[in-house]
Amino acid sequence: MTTVLVLNGPNLNMLGVREPGVYGTMTLAEIEARLASLASEADVSIDFFQSNHEGALIDRIQAAYGQADGILINPGAYTHYSYALRDAIAGCGIPTVEVHMSNIHKREAFRHQSVIAPVAVGQIAGFGDKSYDLGFSALLDHIRRG
Ligand code: CA2
View 1 (cartoon, rainbow, N blue to C red):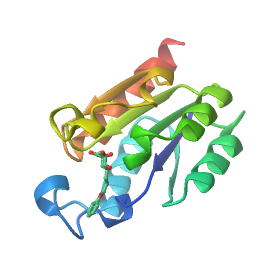
View 2: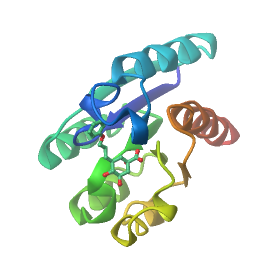
View 3: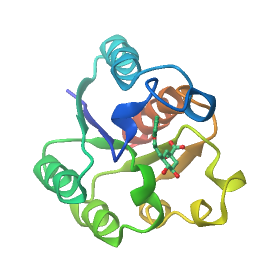
View 4: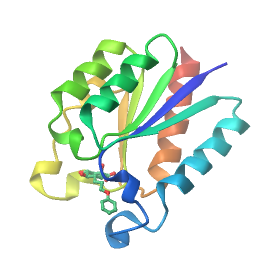
């Protein structure tokens, strides 16, 4: 069975709790529940992990080596500077789709760069909580195309 790992980086556990104007009102638990239902419809096994700690995210990626067929990741602010996370994604060789709720390219200059994008299959940004659904669908297409 196809297995997908969904990773969320720092502060994303606060979704729907604070700053609804930027990131919307949906909580991470609600986003994960919707992904779980999409996964079940697609006969895909899905795991979720969120951490505010770079090393914990890297440990989870390493644990996915040989286990997961794809990773859907919102790396949060690590997107913009974590070479360690980028190396973990490149090193595990698991096809990875990067997602962002906001359109990082029309925000502050420091958010325009993603150090993750060059090792990802692609990036989806700017569709709010729907970015996760779009990313999941794109990841499945990529996996199934082989
Ligand atoms: O747009 C995205 O999904 C981001 O990955 C969100 C990150 C930000 O650092 C990236 O540049 C773009 C921040 C997530 C913070 O989420 C919060 C949610 C509610 C309250 C506070 C923070």
